[in-house]
Length: 218
Image 1 (cartoon, rainbow, N blue to C red):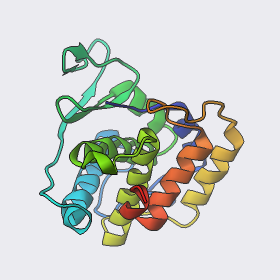
Image 2: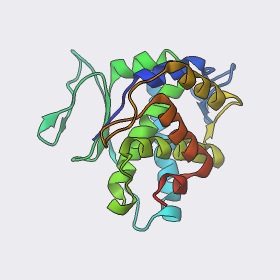
Image 3: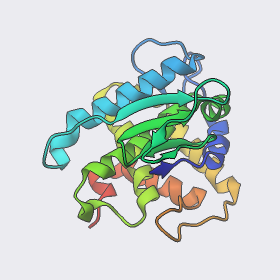
Image 4: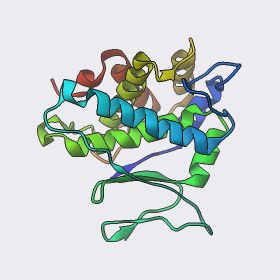
């Protein structure tokens, strides 16, 4: 089960230019920039299309899409069960037991205020965990969360190379600058840790630069 720690990305995305006339990350197809639900749908489509299109280049077997429970919210919709336990609020998740993604709507809204890239990164990261579940265990790294960040970078940049996602010049450099300013003090030490902002950005950039193979053990 993957847990998304929101704080580092909220701060990082304050440096992003929002999509649309001003630039930023955007689905190539026409959409409304200020509509979070449409951005989430676009992110799910983009990430799933990348993995379904390219799976056989990297792995044996057939690709299958994880389920998408979608959003839940206090007072509106309860978090779903993941195995015997119910997911918690204020997080985004990949449920390993039941193979689906889910997220707290309020978490998404909080990050979305800083730019629509937020939902793409959250979904691509959690989808990275779904990819890990489909791999031979020898390909799943002990730095479990950092590998998911790497796979997120590979998927988003791979989708850009396919022409279904667009990054404006300077976006990644701005995210990197934001990470350097943060001073995160939670480095990766075990399989449940996500790593510092610098470690996470390094993993994301490795996937962006080297693709899926750069996210796998040597």
